[in-house]
Image 1 (cartoon, rainbow, N blue to C red):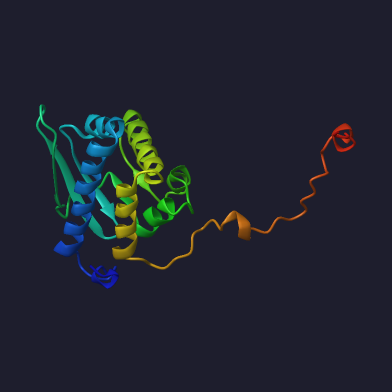
Image 2: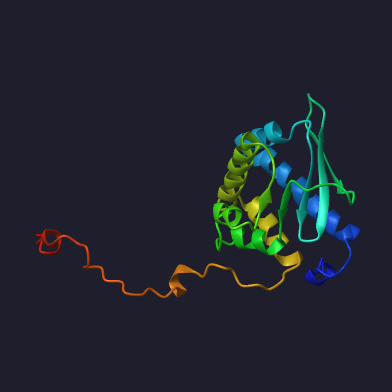
Length: 187
């Protein structure tokens, strides 16, 4: 699947919905196989729930069914479904690539999540866990790479520049440093 398949000016098509659904199903399967703790968190948060998420212009509905066996159904959302999670693909990409933290994106309104405070804390913990696992879990890294290769991009620069490229003004390491520390001799 090529990046140009998903264009921000297109109406929603089934390829975009199918692509997001595929990533979500594979994420759940990878957590089930590779990290029992995160999988249990996911089940606890989503069990017997129906939610709508929106990434760019694509809205999907995720529904979990059953109480004994976890079952997830992902489909295109109805036009009047209200998303509880809204963001852009580039924001997800910037978080995964380390340009933003999840907290920064939420604080700046780049990710909007709606729910009770308990739900928000659980969702935050789950996302932090999944992002942390990506560094050591090759299957998750493959999902991130596939998303990066195939999802639309508005080609925007991150709001926060990398620390190596930031200009530091009036920085003096010796200012506000105790003279005893500066004059200390190490043998």
